[in-house]
Length: 286
Image 1 (cartoon, rainbow, N blue to C red):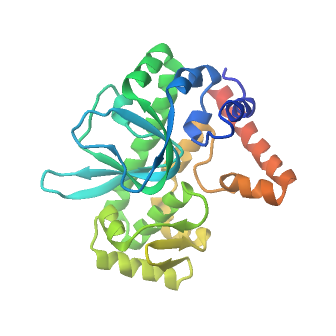
Image 2: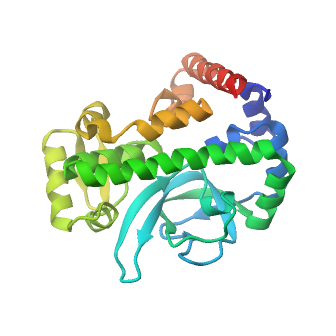
Image 3: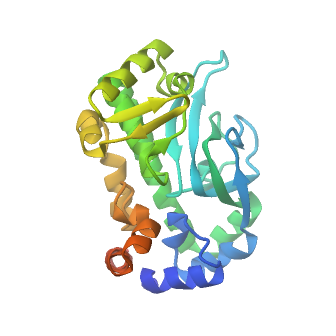
């Protein structure tokens, strides 16, 4: 059984000066993390940073600490649509975890942040040295495969307004605060629809008081009602992540842990302690 997550999180915060925010790394045992730690390199990830190029050998994997990355399917004729997003719950470069070195998809940063980078060869050596590390990383692959499947389902069977609400919720889960920085043009590309359709769908949500919009920014005002609009297009991958890792992917009090601790240290400690107990039980089940 892994070391209790609460104690492990304190160990990580001590060694990395409170810097680790990637939940996949925090879910690792101390021994498994020790295989990765010497090779991790922290670096900023501006908008547009390419993490994976199509049909090109992958050189690094990125554990996102802040920001959001888009995984986009493309065709030789230039058609493209977003099939998944990755934030601080996971890492880029999934094909490497499955034993290959490239993919026809591309992955780039849509919301700026920072991450911890590791060379492919170093990660392969770490996985060869620890089967439990490899298995834990494959759990993230499972959650991402479910996310892409749900994206296909949403694209084929849900209205644009519902799909937009789902996309906003997924991004909201992966950032601090309520402001999402994007454009109508980018949303049309990610959702595979005309820009005019995105503009109309945003207006519907804004008129109902769920969001506010201004140039290059959408702010979530009423998450509960936004989830109601998204309906069953949202929630399946999030539930699977919680099942496999014992950590919530949906936005909750823990997402704003720093603000909560500042406003009420006693309440903040209680919330974090409750999360650690939840993770401890997940480790015991694993």
